Length: 72
Image (cartoon, rainbow, N blue to C red):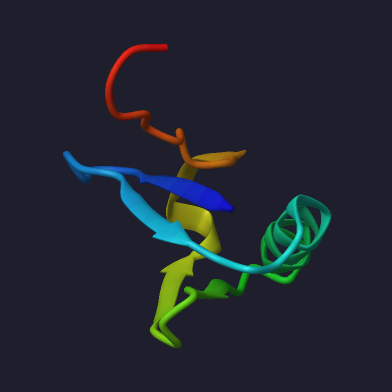
């Protein structure tokens, strides 16, 4: 699943592919915001992304677009 994180005062968004469910991503963000902590997500390659919860501008949760080759 693809997750896009918009960070305040940053021109680019963070994009990562992860194996966790959309509900788990939402729960982690809600928990981080409630405790004024950090949002920590791990991608499919094992790399971690850590963002201060107060700096999260938006979170877009979805699946990556599958591209097709040739005619549809």
